[in-house]
Length: 297
Image (cartoon, rainbow, N blue to C red; front, side):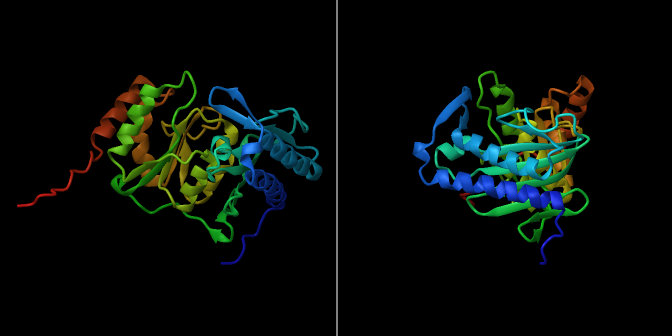
């Protein structure tokens, strides 16, 4: 397949993502020497996050000095903060994986124009996989056009998620959500990098993704990959304006709808009526598959 016709801003973002990826790959050769600190309990930051983020910002602002920056580690401190063009950056999504030597992490860069994500890059430096999307032009992994999974039965689907890990997280509710999905799907996975989770939904490697507690830089780029690959993204009740709501649900259209019916009642945005409707819809979903008879007569 021929290479996608890339938007000029995507080319700059790719350059920035690859520069960050090179910093991450060099550090991964001796990860035990990387300095690590905690922003809060179980929420880590390393000198690699900071160096990668600054490399991204330097490249983006050199090309677009009039644009704004919204980055995980430095916040909104650089660029022209009154601009309609805002680069949303996670320089190393999956820091906990990185500091343990688990090679599941990525660089995530998105460009929002007047609040809507228009460009997206997710780069996996360990596999040299580059995911890109421009609104209206489709999503790609390297040179391959992406489409979400065609599965329509939840029992056949592989679902990814993220587990709660911060003090104060609602562990009881999350366990209930996991129980609902685990009993009705082919499997539940927790890779540990939300941007890659969304990229994998776009690629059809998984059928859906859900998580709470996420920040805009975790999901901005990945959300455009999913929608440009034919999927849907929103909060747990199915509302599309989710970016700053700390809830994310993504999947192929059919599976997305089934998961809204299943998980919508757990959303902090669900009204009593929404919860009642979700419970009624969930009651009509197939339950756990029966265990096979291992001793047939």
